[in-house]
Amino acid sequence: MITAALIGVVAGVAAGLLGIGGGALFVPALVLILDLPQVDAEATSLLAIVPVAVVGAARQHRYGNVRLRDGLLVGALAVPGAAIGVVVVNAVPERAIEVAFAGLLLWVAAQLVRG
Image (cartoon, rainbow, N blue to C red; front, side, top):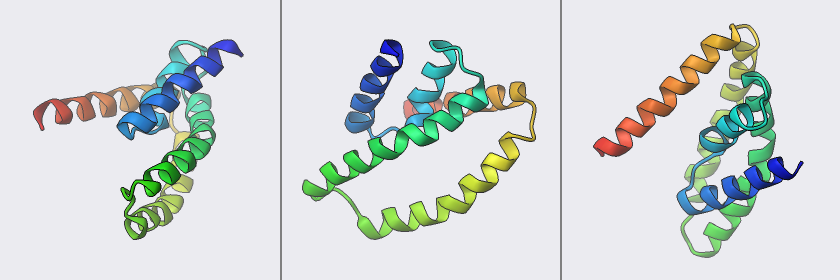
């Protein structure tokens, strides 16, 4: 429990500081440190990111940094995408999900370095 709490604190600070979501920190930490299976880590991350996103968005809104209309549009359209993703992730071999997730993180890192 202490390790999970530390993961939450570190990921929360990073989310607030860098605007990153659960996928970039929660999932790798849950898999590598808490030894959760990939799919379980992804599902846990989806739940954990809800309070992080609410608090972070509320605080940023106070600073005038939230584009409410854009955020609500992106969020509303992401809901059916998340539902489809859950069906797919539970039908695909876990190793394929791990490799795809690692590839996504590498691609994002490359884009950030390039950018």
